[in-house]
Image (cartoon, rainbow, N blue to C red; front, side):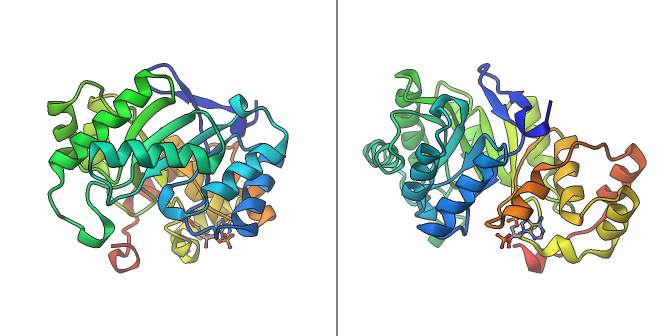
Length: 276
Ligand code: A2P
């Protein structure tokens, strides 16, 4: 089986394809539309979008135009980071479905624990409100799995302490050199699946000489090493590209990085100025 057809199983039994196409920074219109269409043509069955990316309409249109049955494709979207009320979350989710043109979603996430414009603000109450709205849609069968994104353990604990459903997913920025061990360890304990966005460090890891050397050894591209590394960590990488040859390359990762090379990649230190 090709890796694009392989799945992980979330805590509620829902299957999620191991690699998804990221669409953050894919422009609404032709760019996002073509990227999604090309990904689906080349075997991807998992597409990640968000209200905040403003490309849901293009993503939905590409999915429909692909001719592939909706139920064969796993689609994620995310509640905008500033929406922290029950009513606001309900309205926003309905709008997401309308923009995508679907009657259900596979995964819906709270995009961030705080508005992007007020990073670090305590929104514990608002996150619980938004979560309760998402729980209702989940119970009504409108969303097959619900989760969070960019949540640290304390943000997740707030949800666990005050609501019924344990998030199925936490989608975080995760790539070689970025230490996410505390969040990953906590999520593993709670059976919360990790998705890795920006698996190439938004592209900057491609210049890393150490990763390039590992790539040469395996006769693979640097991007393929970055993506394969995250798969071997048991996470679902979401590489973003708008170019067909890269979309194909990023999904062509049916190989194994040996344990000693994984350990070497673990030692690479990130450059926080390029990320945080
Ligand atoms: P583009 O969309 O023009 O192909 P990340 O997924 O970590 O956010 O990284 C996305 C960035 O990396 C984008 O700039 C994307 O550019 C670029 N990119 C994606 N896949 C590859 C690849 N296989 N080789 C080189 N650059 C890539």
